[in-house]
Image (cartoon, rainbow, N blue to C red; front, side):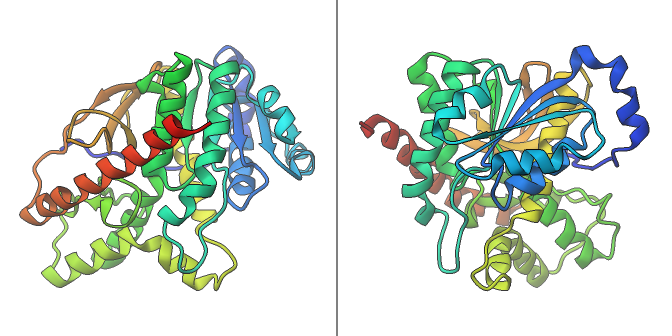
Length: 339
């Protein structure tokens, strides 16, 4: 099984100084929802990436201040803030990559489905603007519920005639880094070299960590069940711990940056970049399913198979597929029924 590897290489000033020799491949990136709990730390991490030449920050409020703050950090990316609905097209115009953490966060007692009625409309509006002014961009969707917001984005792009399934990604990297962390704690291994493939969706039991494929690991049935549940519901752990003050923002920002950085490397021509992400494919009966993919200059270069699954994993996947199908359908119908 070819597993996805997600690692953060420290960004150094030396790397930044080498920027002058790579300007032709430097990217223009936008963060939509840049003033929020995910958006601000995500934007800071992207500012530190020397492969980004322009970083546009968009939100309804506060973005000029966030942009001014980040612009004082001595890295090459030129940061601009765009505030208000009337500036969304200007923020997205000509971008190579658009990262979307926009929307409301999850609160105690809320499921990702509870977010749907609010965030669905936000994502639809962003997709309409992106289709108009950045039709060739790669779109990275963080806004929950990802199992439905990615199909919403796809349906809007289809209506606009600009949909490219190789360039639309649901960011599920948070599930991967949680799995790596929790498994390394259980196995007493280095979390930076622990590598868990996580497939399926990005909500509860649709999240399917393939623990049987972790090299060298041995789990008791009890540990297997406990780890799987913790990976699937790690978000609830953070929501509860924050006691109503928010959801997983810092870890999600880190995960969002990791996937964006991997994609930027692939877009510049780096070979062998593999990551798990929620994309359109035919691996299962679900129209969108998180799988390991090889990234390339055009986005998704290759979809990988799931490899050999344990009986427990097969059973979990069989249960998850109907939910993923229904959640994708919910997103498609939202766009079709929208006025």
